[in-house]
Amino acid sequence: MAYFAEESEMLLEKLQAYVPTATPFHMPGHKRNTALSGYLSKLGADVDITEIDGFDDLHAPESILMESMRRAAGLWGSDEARYLVNGSTAGILSAIYALGTGGGKAVIARNAHKSVYHALEITGLSPVFVLPEYDEAHGAFLSVRPQSIDEALLKTPDARFVLITSPTYEGVISDIKRIAEIAHARGIPVIVDEAHGAHLDLGGKFAGGAVKAGADIVIQSVHKTLPGLTQTAIMHISGMLVNKADVWHALDIFETSSPSYLLMASLDGCTEFMKEKGRDTLTALHGALESFFKEAETLERIRVWRPEGAFLFDDMKILISGKRAGVSGKRIMEILREDFSIELEAAFCDYAVAMAGAGTTAEELGRLLSALRVMDGRFGLSENGKRYPCPAIPESVLDIRRALLCPFEFVPLDCAEGRISAEYAWAYPPGIPVFVPGEKIDVSSLSAWKNMVADGLKTVKTRSGDGMLAVLSENEYKSC
Ligand SMILES: Cc1ncc(COP(=O)(O)O)c(C=O)c1O
Image (cartoon, rainbow, N blue to C red; front, side):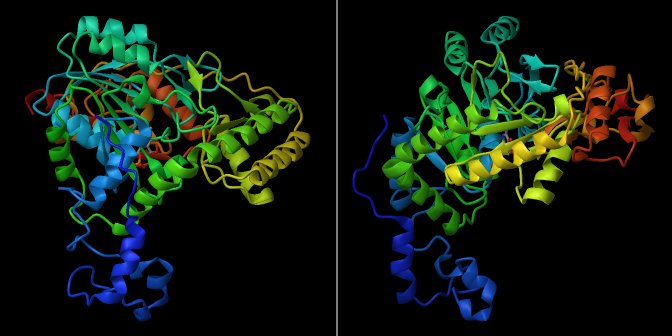
C-alpha cells in the first residue's frame, strides 16, 4: 500500500542545520572545509556528508530517507520507491539481476538501452527479442505492439519477465496497460525502462506513465526531465509478482555504498517540489509546448516531426527533422549550437532531438522556434528520400558473456557479414546496441551501422577501431 506522510523534514534543511554544529572526523575527506579551495563551495561541499547518525542509510532506510521515498511512492502511485544515485542504469541492472539471476529467458523489446544488454551479460539470461514498430523514413523505433508481446509469451511461457522501453529517446510511448495485462495473465512481471518519462502522469497532458498503467517495476531518470541533479533516478515497485527484498538486495550489489547526500537531497527536494508545484509547473510547460508545436507547423524545410503510428507521444521531446531540406541531424545540431547558442540533446541520421524539462521556460521555447524559423529560410527544398530499414533481430549463436570470453580477431566491416560479433557497438546517444557479442552479423545491422557512421553520429565500439569489427575466431569459438 502506498503511504503518504503529510509532514516531512526536508533532507537539505536537516543537513544545513547539522553542519555548523558538528566536527567531522568521518568521510568525506574535504571535511566540509570549503576554505581549502573554491571548487568545494561552488559544488556544495558544505552539506556533503556520509551516512552519520540521524541521516539514515539508503541501503537500509528507516527514517528520513524512508519517509522521503514513501512520499515519492505516494506521488507516483507505486507501492514502494527507492532513490537511485547511479542513474537509471543502476535500477535497470538491479531489476534484471533480481528477476533473472540464474538464467532462463526474458522477453525484451529490442530497442533497449545498453544497460539492459549489460544485465543480460551479467545474469546469463537468454533474451527473446521483440521488434517494436519502426519508422523507416527516419530510422526510429515506435511503440511495442501488445500483440507482439502476446506472441512472444505464447512461445516463451517460462519467461521470467517482460522488459519495455517507454518512452523511447524520441518520446514514443507504448501501451503498457495492455502489455501488463497480457503478461500478468500468465503471472509474468513487467519491467519498464521509463528513464525518459519521470514526468508522465504528474501534470499537464503528459500522459502514459508506466506506474499508473500497472507495470511491476518502473525505473525513471529523475535527472532527465524533472528538477533533479544529474545521476538522480528512482525505482518503483508495485504488485505481488516481484519480491521486493530481492530487488533491494540487487541494489546493494550495484549501487555505491557511499551514496551522495547532495544527490539524495536533490531527490528529496524534487519529490517535494513535484508534490507541491509539479502539477502547475507541468501544466504551464505543456501549454507552452502546445503553442510551440502549433507555431512550428508553419515550418517547411527544417520541420518539427512527430512520429506517426505511435501509441502515444511525449511532448517533452521536440524532434527536428532536416529530411525535407536534405540536412542531417548532426548539421542541425551544429547550426543551432554555432549560430544560435542552443544546445540540443542528440543528433540522429536526419533529425535531432531537443529535450524540454520541468525547468524549460516559454521564453526558451520561443528562442528555439525563432532559430528554427531562420534555419527554415536558409535551406531550399531538397527532399532526402533515404530510407533506414529496421535492423532484423540477428541469430544469437552464443550468450553475451561466453562470447566475450572467446578468442576473437579484427576484420574490416565489409568482411564481417556472417561472422559472430565479439563486441558491442552503438551510437551514443541513444546507446541501443547495433552489434551484440554472440550475435551473427547480418546485412541489415551492417547497413544500419554504416548509415550511422556516414551521418556523423557519435559511435562507440567496445573493442575495435575505425572501419573494423571484432568477431569470434572462426573455429575456436565452438570449443571455448
Ligand atoms: C532509454 C534509456 N534507459 C536508460 C538510460 C540510463 O539512464 P541513466 O543515465 O540515468 O543511468 C538511458 C540514458 O540515456 C536511456 O536513454
